[in-house]
Length: 288
Image 1 (spheres, rainbow, N blue to C red):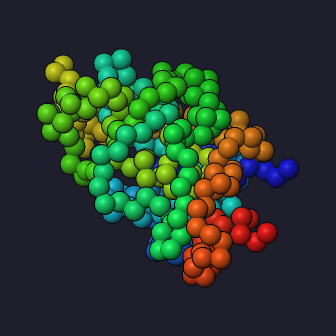
Image 2: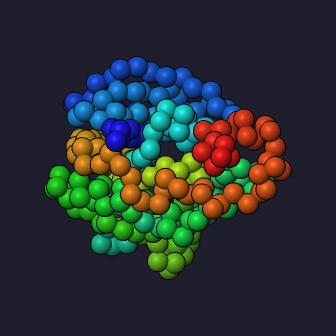
């Protein structure tokens, strides 16, 4: 039984929290290019933790430009098994107010052209994705948020849009009719790739605004998002710190075996290049 190693992806301020000891910073290269930034490796409350600033330090990478594959593959290379994603979102429902926390359990895709799989080029893999997040990790995040006094919604539908622009009023009103709960620009590609990499994945969604549908609130702007995030960053740090301490060493969910019956291509037809480059994902299924 080994200690859990937890990956955390979000704003660079997340790892500037009390109790986090930095051991080293790692710059990785992957078959998919460079991750957003160097990984900050250290310890939080006795648990090995790896942080990655999603948009790079200084927030210099747009959502559409993020190298999601490199980011998640890098976590895999570093031995991470669980990934906690911390993200700002807009609320699409009256009862989910700015300052609340949502732990989404479903996603709806409105992006276009973003690479969303590690596979292809002669290797066909179909992972199950009906339940796109790790139920066990979601439960831990919801518990941690509640114990830290946050107003937490333990489920919800996250609508992922392309961006970088915020929604038009017409889009926002139609999205509400679809029954989604929150809106963001980053988390669905991460969830898909985490599943393919057999990583547990869950989102701590920090509600910053009401998008532009709410007549009684100001339309979403960068200033509003940043102001709300700054107010809530200490709470987010506390939730992450508590959640990391609640994660057990062993995984009993199905995330760790997502590829077991998902590799469709005949073993002798898998290209040698794919076998080599994707060894961290495939080896345990192809070496027997």
